[in-house]
Length: 157
Image (tube, rainbow, N blue to C red):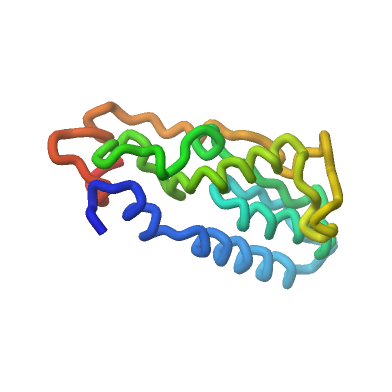
């Protein structure tokens, strides 16, 4: 795909990478001595499938409150299909996902989604499955996000 298209950037970092990384972390964490298990916080969750893995680990693997996660405002605000070609201001990692994913993250945030272990028709109104929204504060000047001929390659912040 073209390097000035956000979808190309997203395709180079698919949601499955995020989910696989969380699964590997949870597997390693589960192998530790339960009495000495540290708390784990997963930052910058962009994919609803990755978020569901964390919820399932809390529910099914007994991690409970020792496992927390956050998403970021840009994952709740933007959708990859709405990002214009060449608009590199929204380049981030993990990348912004599609509108369906954004809406599903909102449902998890406001408590409109059932826990991962529940039947699909089980409502959880008012109980958020995401612990917080973090800023993902990584300041940089506009010159590091945009320039003539910009694309989503690695030279941009």
